[in-house]
Length: 308
Image (tube, rainbow, N blue to C red; front, side, top):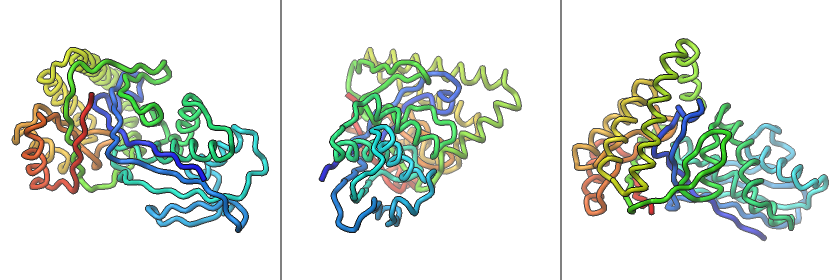
């Protein structure tokens, strides 16, 4: 039996613009995890058990483009295994689905690592990341690659599509409060909506994406020098541009305002938008007050994570 876990992730800056070649910053969220356990079975075949999504099925009965089936097949193909041994892949996750926390990427990474180890050929991070990216295409159509990258390496990253991964120095630890709207919001839909805007007026939106890229670069520099106040201001500026992209929502804006009014240094939506999560930059001692304000404003759950 082999087991592997992978963390969630949260985007700090740059969502949507990252799809168009601009940078983004993201960090792992280790308070939530996806876990895959692979064990022998005596029934024959490959069984997939995923109680979180009410799935119990034999691999051969799932469509080849089912995300879980595709990940498992990709491992067999990569390892040149045509006759895999009978086994059960059991999945558990505490990461909310379709909420911008990287649930799909975390499940893929956990499966790839656990299954390749079970088969006696554990894959290196670079291959894990590449296979997880292919799976992300089934979830998001045109993924940026940031989810699988942060989840695979479990480090803060400065990410530009199709360029080498860069980690960066954190000048001083800072605390992020994640507030969930409780609204399921598949990233594929909001990414598609932004693409339609871009296709209708490319010059306008290229300027917006470039402005987002400038905010991301300035945010990285603020993090490296430990300038938390500036980081908060940049969060507010990034949220305004995401609102212009039509990917915010009434619920997200309410949570963002509640966080700011309760003392957060800055706040914005995170991820695809139109539901899912927002984030707020908070002083550690003020986190309980911000959490109460978010709950009063409708947050279904809050998670506190420290970036260090």
